[in-house]
Amino acid sequence: MARNGEKSEYRFTVFKPGTPKNVKVRSIVFFIILAIIIFVQSFYWIFANKVEPYVLGMPYSMFFIVLLIIIEFIVLLLLYFLEGINERKGGDV
Amino acid sequence: MGWLIILIIMFVYLIGVLFLGSLAGRGRAKTALEYIAASRNLGFIVTYFLMGAAIFSAFAYLGGPGWAYSKGAAAFYILGYCSLGLVPWWLWGPRAHKAGVKYGYVTQAQLFADRFQSKALSVIMGIVSILAFFQYIALQMKGSAYIFEVASGGRIPFWAGALISYVVVLVYVFFGGVRGVAWTNVFQGAFMISVAWILGLYLPYHLYGGPAEMFRQINQANPHHLLVGPGTKMSFAAYSSALLVSVLGFVMWPHLFMKAYTTKSDRVLKQTILMYPTFAIFMVPVLFIGFAGVLQVTPDKLGAPDRILPWMFNHMGWSPAVIGIILAAALAAAMSTQDTISHAAGSIFQQDVVEVLSRRKHSEKEATLWIRISVVGFGIVSYLIAVFGKQTLVALLLGAYGSIVQFLPLAIFTFFWPRATKAGAISGLCVGVLYNYLIVFKVIPKLWGIHAGIQGLVINVIVFIIVSLLTKPMDKEHVQKFVTL
Image (cartoon, rainbow over all chains, first blue to last red; front, top):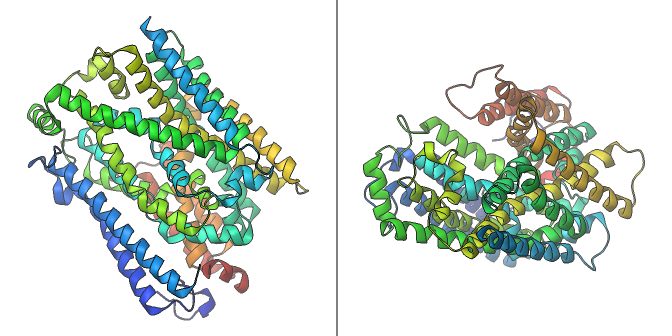
């Protein structure tokens, strides 16, 4: 992402200097997962634009959307707890 | 007789909220920081409902069922938008919070104006925000006026219905500040969610024997109703671009963004983001209400789709007490949005316009007074607009309403791209807003059914980057402050 030929102070900076490598990797992984969730939710009609079968009383499309919401919730929960463990270790708080 | 009982229940609710909100801020410090940001110490439950009330507006309560009734599957958009709206905030919400603590911001524009060293930016953002707020409030007023019209069987006219609940809102915002807004939202939120669930589950079971059977019958009667795409009420491009622009733009709404400054810590902020998808789950039965109406009444007979919720219970033969509670809950939805907006509008007008343009700095006491006056002034103007507004005026407000997402590049570049400059920020924002206005006023056509906000955003980012690269970089140490938070 760095722009060549520019001083490092003005580079596109996602992480503050000194961020441990595992935190960087984790952030990128979760960023990608959440981006995929946003994409699938926005383009749900590619995956589930149909009425049948009915699941939990909802048309398949609506069930699919609700399922994605639950997956999103679990992903965020996981991210929250992983960050919590890290902050306690790093004494950042 | 029935309508009197309904009105009495609604007034009991109004009086309860009035006291709760007005007394919430009692005994607190009399500073602008307290009035706007609750001295930065709100906890999780309060922040959760404070943010949730923005979703559970009159739009969700009357409009959500209305969409499900008239547009079918297009209403699923509301679920996607509720669940994802706060997710982008994980990236910069905690940073905005830290910046607020470190450098003393209480509004969104203060952060960006400081980063880009520009008073003009602050004033432009302040004006766009307040115009957008007028539109937002007008929508809620239409909702609450309609609720009173239904409750009284047409005895309370539009101007009075819009006025009654809004006066209550203004009084508790005036006295209670953000704490008044927050505590009433906890009550209003819990109240309307409970009522929505009971209604949303009762109607499908009572009328059809269950949601699955209800959807089966809808699908039989109209196979297109539960789908999106060609032949339905919403095209693929419209659905996806509307959802994307809502997700990207949601936290850029100044009244939401500035809640980064009210929370106790960035952990509380993350807890709120994490729990936010639950509001989308709460919306599911709300949509059921609208779907339940599809086979009950034809659109011609109903008039406007927003009328589906009142139509449903008017034809169920329920007692006035039950109807009173449902209508009070609907009123709660409208009011819990009006209060946040009015509070934010007053705060923004004072902090980002008056304070920036005035020659001397106001004392804390003067500032708080100014905000309170601004809240009331904003209230009066938005009421007049809602009741007497003409078509061109509405277009002006709609343009601002659609322009909020154009603040997004400011947030991203503030926290991640030190090379971004003042000239880039102002020109990007102006081009984005202007483009949106040109579409609203139909000077240029809307391309391929894609949401105007997305199109404006692309141009905005391009202009922002090019102009930034062409202008002199800003002071190294200054810009580094914002990327190393």
